Image 1: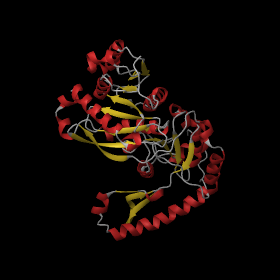
Image 2: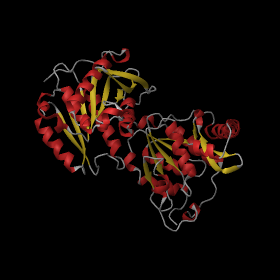
Image 3: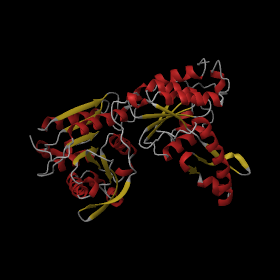
Length: 442
């Protein structure tokens, strides 16, 4: 066995999650047994704690077969294929959902005592249970958290079968488990005390967490983040799809530039954007290329084309009512970083700050010495080729600049804690350099 009890399991699990300490994290425990584990994790991380209330929607004539799941706030995730194959009618689905929603609401009242659920929009959410056997509940919890607006999901359990990542890898952005034995029959075999967790213990964990609010331990203010607004960005003769988010009282707005045609849907871009939004910065995620243009890979490396699109989008953004007068920054990834620096070097660009994530600033070539915006280059320590290219590009910059290396990270920053570090670096750079006045060359 590995654990004395669930509290001991939570403390062991927390040690594997230390890379999240200081980030904007919400810990969700799966009732009932996952809540005391989650309570220890939340305390160790200085994070908010809540329950993840999930109810499986079983096929009427075969309840063990899930056709979806529901969560709070009207969130529902339906497996259309199962519904189709099982010939479940809309009326039958509605009946099952209504019955399970009554149970869910009853448990919410019992556990929280009238408190509102913790908001997940734009946060890193750590979903915690006391272990994984089949993984069906954990998968549903991750899907519900995603539907409630989580920007990044970490599924963390003390023990799971050795092949658990193959079962659950597609539902979470990160999987954490300290013990994955091959001889796995039941979760309880790894606990000295695996007695049932009752409702009173769940309530006690949540009340204790609510009595010690985490807001006093945050180093950065958390802003209320509005919903993303779908926009049509006018870039010359082209209309590009985008998502604009501007918190109330925003100090500035950051345009995200990526050479591919899926920038606004990129999980990494959206994760960083959510961190900037919480810090009071607006963001515009949009596609520099259409899907048709992206098919021709030459367009992805046409820095001049990408830079013109970015400059046109900047002009469009400055004309929007909610962003008029705000400082403008660029966040570039891959070839989009070259486009950001190219566009920032244009006379009269008035760009307040530039951040490059795993970018190719070398593709901006002779434009680099003309950049006046303070520039931060972020590269993974194991991304050796790109790191060397960034060092060469930095040597050509004449503006305020910094090269930040994230230890152990590769090109996509997929390692535990790497993307959180990128977000922190970008947030601090933009908030330190953006003000609602034009940028002036040194």
